[in-house]
Length: 396
Image (tube, rainbow, N blue to C red; front, side, top):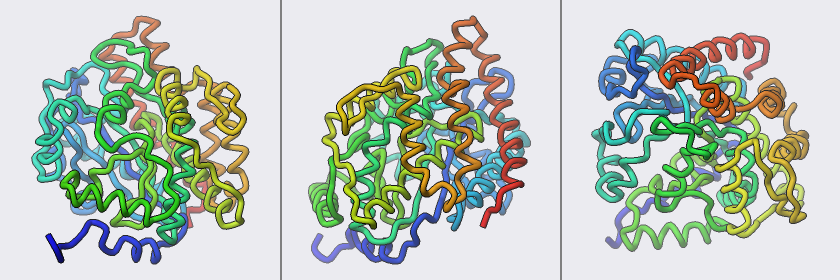
C-alpha cells in the first residue's frame, strides 16, 4: 500500500553504519533422544526452560527437533569463536538436564521427515503454508557467518564475488552423506533438500550495486512474492537488519574445530574480496551456469572430487581448489587473527571431512544408531578441545 513500510527501508543506512569484518556466528543443533539417537520434538521444552543468560542466544528453526545458537556481534573472529564453543557446550548441558541429547550433522541419518513437526511461529507457519512439501522435507542443519561490511554498494559487489568460491566452501563443509538410513552418494544431501528445492535459494545472479539488488527486492515485495527479506534464502545474501553479508552455504559441522575452520575460511574470502575491491583489483562475476556446475560437483563429490578453475577453464582437485583459496586469502589471515582456526582446513583436506567419515563408517558396516551416538559425543568433545585452543589466542 502507498506509504506502507518497505522491507528495504533503512537498509542503506544500516550498511553505511556497519563496521568492516565484525563477526557473528550461528550453528544449528539436532535435538535427539539419548537412547535411540532419533530426532525428538522438544524445542519448546528446551527453549522455554533455558536460563536467562542462554535464552537470548537460542532460536527456533523450521522443525521442533532443531534449535539454533547465535553469538553476539564481535570485533574479532576469535571472540565469536569462543562464544560459539561456549554456547554449544552450554546448550548441550542445558538440553541434557531436559533429557535431550545434542548432535550435529547436515541432515539426520535415519529420522524420517514425516515424523517431524513445523515450529509454531508466524514466520515458519508462513513458510509451511506457502511451500508445503518443500518445507516438510527440509530437515537440515547448517552454520552461518555474518560479516559486517561498510557501504551497501560495496556489500553487493562482495556478495557477487563470493558466489565464485561458494562451491569450495560447500565441498569443505560437506557433512550429510547419509539420509533415511542410506548412503545417498551425495556428500551434501542437505544441499538437495534445501538449496536445490527452496525458492529464491542457492546462487543468485551477479549484481553490481545496491540499486540493482533493491529493484529485484522491490519487485518481489510489490508482487506479493515475499513479505520479509529473510524469504530470500540465497547462499550468500546481504542481511537487511544487521548490515552484514551472510554466508549460508555450509553444512553444519560435528567437529567444532572444523566448524571454525570453515567459518574462518569464509571470513578470509570476504575480507580478501573487500581488500581487492578497495585496491581497485577486479572481482569475479562469473555467470551462474558456471558456478552451478561447481556447486553440483561440490554437492556430489565433496572433497573427493574436482572443481573447475573458472578463470582458466581447467579442472583441478577440490582439495587443490581449497588450497588455492587459502593461499589467495593469506594476506588477511594474520590481520584478522584467523591463522589458528584455519589450521583445521589442511587437516580436513588430509584426514577427511564429515561426509568422508560417514561414508567410511557405512562402508565398514557400522550401526547407524552407534554412528550417531559418536556424532553426539564428538559434538561435545570437540567444543571442549576448541575452547582449550582458543584459550591460547587473543580474542580482542
